[in-house]
Length: 215
Ligand SMILES: [Fe+2]
Image (tube, rainbow, N blue to C red):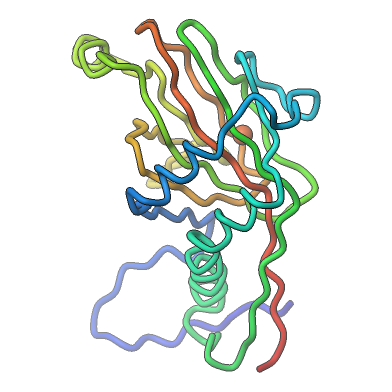
């Protein structure tokens, strides 16, 4: 692919043409409720494919994949189109494209107190995501205490890419909130820190790709 050519359109502009793009979406409460209701011990164990030091990782059934795709597919496609447009410095025109979502796998992550998810990335896909479905009662008190520390991190996810340079940062954390959903490139390293509050921090992830063709 040839390098895009920058064409200024404003008198003054600051822009970020390099580096990974992340996506955020606030999931509707109904989708959160439906995904929580769909979780069951009858689902297959997915933990052999994953690095998490957590109690349970349960594979999505086809029905759950369909449910997630109907609630999140549009955002996944919008991420793809936004990133392609950013990478082309605005030349790329989504209206000339057709998109198709491919979902490789999905799974619930049931993380309890003192459990964690070591630094890892996802393979066999181009994009991945995480959505938050449940948090232990009382974890806000733990966070209030942790945020008094110089480096709060309890139960947070951390994403990392490259190394710090002048004016470019290599990592950031997100504090999970029920309904928060993040999309990230599959190669992006991330980890989840342990927390102490008794109870379940429940999330899900989906490995996917967006295929495009000319409309
Ligand atoms: Fe992950």
